[in-house]
Length: 635
Image 1 (cartoon, one colour):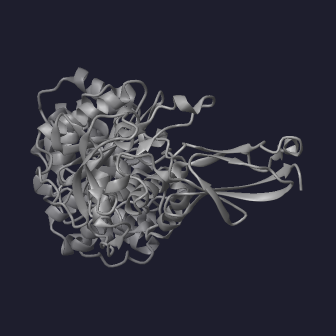
Image 2 (tube, rainbow, N blue to C red; image 1 turned 180 degrees about the vertical axis):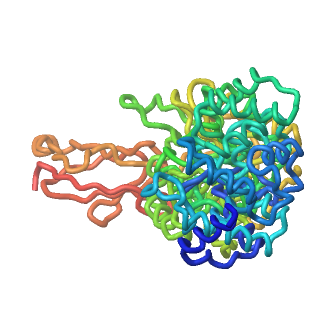
């Protein structure tokens, strides 16, 4: 009995059941999910990816025809020189390896690529720790049977292609695409002979030391009679231990943090690749220390670009002023209600002499400062709470610290007044728009934003500006954006960015049509703190334009819950105490315990002992302030 037959009999007697039937090649190819989450632009192109490996890092499946010949030649030379000659098992190498393993202390393997492929497909054929990381004789025989079966169902090309996509090359890098990118920052199609030799050497021992890998790669190329540079092989092998690979695509990568789940996902979006690239180039011109970030949406609240610094955290997703959205909506609703407009005069009351207050129009406040520091005072009291409730009830779960939600609100307020949930994923259906305010109020609100570089299609709104940085909004034609940067000079940098985008033609310059209920009027200010100018005004509010809104007024004397000493009135019948409002508007009205007692910003009152409720009314009769106080004096 010859040696081959004897080995065959021994293996048959020791073998277990033959491995399970071979799955179709297409099932294996299509079932291997990459461990990446990929962001697609609106045309299906790749914008960004994020690695989310559970065990191994896998990229997309690489077809055999995409691989360069050096990779295939070195693989076959290293692993299976007679691959295209045998039918699954190289019996000559198998017997030689068995003989050496029986009589020599130096172990040798003889697995063909088909046998290795069979072991990858069937977990029962994989080596175990209990057997020193090697297959048992029974497993080895089952592996030969499985390889023969594999060869009857798969072509040689399919076996080779699947092997290169399933093999682990180094650490957690599985497949030729992950290995090429992870080790050399290249696509498989770009591999050169030296790199292919290193990869082929790694297949035999993925965790071998760089020195050993270089030696094996050098020997491999000598066997192939190829031009070799062992020094370069040592340099390539010396880089095997560097940190994990970066993603191959990074445009709008911060959006992938909003995607839950593991790898294998392809997320379609509304993002415009060209606009994304232009925005990224502009951000690259801003000093990195400012950490500038911008999100742009169209008038339907679909996100078209989202550019942030490469390093997290994403400045657009956290840390925004928490009351800003409700404050924005409250002002818009105040415009809609007629209590404020672009020409309304506002002032922060000084702590001492109120006559020194600096009155400015709302437009001027916005142009010279930022939105969060505009002294709206009581103008927003009646709208603030309701605005917070409205925002909380909007679909999608509003997050006051997220720039996407802030952008969605700005699209509504600077558009037609209808809110649409901001959408960056194109596989998410759009909600029905919800009316937040009238188109007339939205038009007036958007037209009070500052003009950039004299371009009426480009409007600018500083939302929060300070030593820590700047948060701004802008309107460019049909697009709206929110931008943020940190540190000194942030506002200037962002304004320049907006101007550059405008010069590049971002969006068509389409001026909004004037909706019903809006008229242009020449405004004369009283007091005359600003020059006469034309403003857009809601119909019916012409008389209040350029004036101090009565709803700003508050009772400053007597102080709420104070005790007024009017005992001098017992000896001095003409003694009076003074009710004082600020600002002192002539049309204000006073009401004491439900009875109107006078008009104007000041009123003298003869005190009588008792508890009182004092109310300050606007000219139209609505209550703008109310206090309670006590008085000592004659009964």
